[in-house]
Length: 108
Length: 108
DNA sequence: CTCATTAATCGTATATTGACGATTGACGAT
DNA sequence: ATCGTCAATCGTCAATATACGATTAATGAG
Image (cartoon, rainbow over all chains, first blue to last red; front, side, top):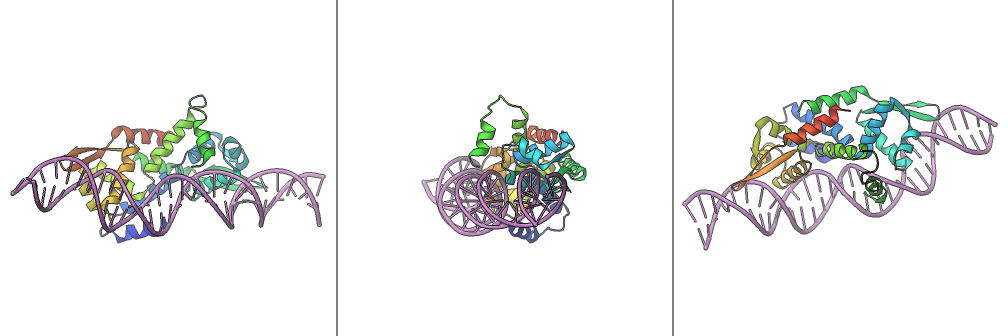
């Protein structure tokens, strides 16, 4: 995604508009929840407040490695955050990220 | 997607929680706007009310074929609709689709 | 009818995603 | 120090997404 994306955006003659980066931002967030498993994870975290990684794995019909990858995607998009708690990792929603997502979508 | 995924979603036609299909629905819609070009297209249609395909192509730094493909994705997700108008195709937002997207995201 | 225009589709190349098992690193308990 | 547990990461494979030029189908103009 990086190279072609960037090129496409930059090569646009009317690149001056700020809407371009907003579009990218919105796409980034939307893409993060563009998979059923990630929607499920996000909802789970919202419902439970916070959640140890293993608990999430138990709830989903996916391998641990796969869940970890999905969590990484959500984390990189700024929708969740995880803090290390001993040998486990405790995940929770990033309210700012979710708020921004709602703002952007709601503002359509 | 491999067997496990499919099995997971399909193996519960309607018996299990409804949240599963809602998750899928939300992911489907989010995925549709999970690309900057499609966000730009959707916004363009919202701003203009309706728009001939060619006009969209002119606004974006993408080839006609590519824009057409993005439009197809948006159409399949139920976010836009297009009606044939002579030799051109006039696209417009599907209010129901956008409303549903907003509901689902807003309800998080 | 022929031509130009418009947009969908085809074919294709490349990039990214999604899934998993295996491995690694970090930590607490013994 | 060793062990078991937990979660991230690696390596890999199949599937999907993205982009484009070329082609096709549909339509209106002449």
